[in-house]
Amino acid sequence: MLHAKISVSDDVNRLPLEARLLFTWMIAHADDDGRLKGKSAYIKAIVVPYTDWSSNKVEQYLQLMKEVGLINHWQVNDKWFIEFPKWIEYQKIRKDRYTPSNLPSFTPNKANPLTTDGQPNDNQASAKEKKREANLMKVKTSEANRLADKSSYKKDGQTESVDDPNIYDPQNEAECAAKEVWHKWEPDNYRAFWTSYLNAARKGVPASMIYQFSSELKQDSGEKPGAVFNFKYKRYLLTKK
Image (cartoon, rainbow, N blue to C red):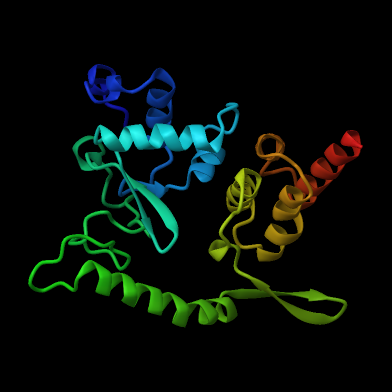
């Protein structure tokens, strides 16, 4: 929901016009708890892919939003997150449609397994201790995740394993777009992510074109989305030679 109060909000109107647009559009990309990944390159690729704004420009707008209290923007273990602090005041989600967030909460007392560092009370570890424990847990689980989060496919009669794309951290705007488009069309096809969508990004297809190819795919075309996407991006690369 986008409440009418947003147009007369003092906090919102303290932002430059472009930052107001970004803030408004970010709301549509948040999960049911009002959170989304907060890396500026990710926000650029997901929320405003067709603008000519740089990631640095997006980062400046996010900082302004944070300064006026419109968002919480913080880092946990080298990953950035965003949360709308007034989410529950304006968003009413039916219980049968609500999906709990898998992203950390900015407020440490919320029931979330990925809660962030806050000011500890008598029953809480210090921020440094919690961060140290989180880092240790990250080291211990990273290898287990790498081995466990795999799928498999047949190639020349042999079974080969494929890492779960959900744990892959995109490195730029094109890779963010590739992951989003894969998740939209073939979330259960791990191989397609690596061999089609991410491969396009790594071969130089820009985020804007990846989104355009996605918009041209049809769910009921009878063809596998990955195969059609492959054709489109390879044709695009040929025209650039």
